[in-house]
Amino acid sequence: MSEPGSTPLYRDGRHYDAFNRHMVADIPFYVEEARRAAGPVLELACGTGRLAIPIAQSGVEIVGLDQSPSMLAHLRTKAKEAGVEIPLVEADCRAFDLGRKFALIFIGFNSMQHLHDLASLAALFANVRRHLAPGGKFVFDVFNPSIAILTRDAERSREREYEDPDAGGRITMDQTLVYDDATQVSHVRWFFSRNSPNGDERDFRIEDLRLRCFFPQELDLLVRSQGFEIEAKCGNFERKPFASGDQKQVVVCRSKWESVSEGCEWSEICANSTGLREAGFFVGRHRGMVRERGKRGPHFLTYADFYQEDGICFGCCSTCPRNPTLPFSVKEE
Ligand SMILES: C[S@@+](CC[C@H](N)C(=O)[O-])C[C@H]1O[C@@H](n2cnc3c(N)ncnc32)[C@H](O)[C@@H]1O
Image (cartoon, rainbow, N blue to C red):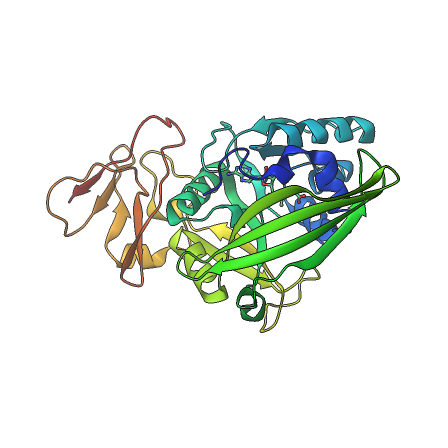
């Protein structure tokens, strides 16, 4: 699980940008997704605005959320220079409430891999669902784990070089990687060294990064278990269909649950969730109650605290949009 400040690289946006200056392949993809969305966009873990700024420049209304104050501070400076306005929220993507809905929510550049356990991921998906407008999309990308990389010796290897934004000169970055196959978390250690006119400094900074791996079939199940369906899964940002050997998993999905009004018909909840109806779930006409057939005793839950698919119950959550404080109750019919 990520903790604020646990990743030193994210304490300095200028170093982050210098370090990632080569990373541009995903920008046209996310700009296109944002332009296709018929409404405002929310970027989670927006960092220094590497993606958010080009999206704002394309004329799309975008809000950025990140838990690192220094990354957001650097974004603010860059947005001002670029002449765009991007409202920013300092928050954890597992716990936020912006009180509004978005046509597109995305979390790019492997950022979801900062969430290591199911509770964190379930919280992320629940927050996304609550903030998605009807028909809205959730898009993210993560690595496709390479067994060869994960199981190789934890030897130090040269990973990257970049210009030092502070002292000038060149910074080299070496890496070691140890993969924990029980938690599926890669423990990466970065060693920064400096070659500058003022002299060389070996390992002047050492940083640890922990990244959760998502294996492809597991990722699809995770998405479905959180009440989303996958509309497209690509192996790169040119939208090539995902296949063996691809480095990336780029996922476009939609919530199976739509907004629901008090006393609404089942079809208003989600046209695609016919399986739920067959499984015995339906919406009563009384104050938007969801009744569950065949269960003993009253169950007071928010209406989507669970849904059933292929005979398996999964956790979800949502509230009544007319009155978000009113929980939908589930009762024996
Ligand atoms: C790889 S960077 C991506 C930044 C930006 N989206 C980009 O594409 O350059 C990951 C970002 O995730 C943020 N982050 C990590 N865990 C987070 C969390 N739980 N909630 C919000 N932001 C988080 C970090 O502060 C960092 O800015």
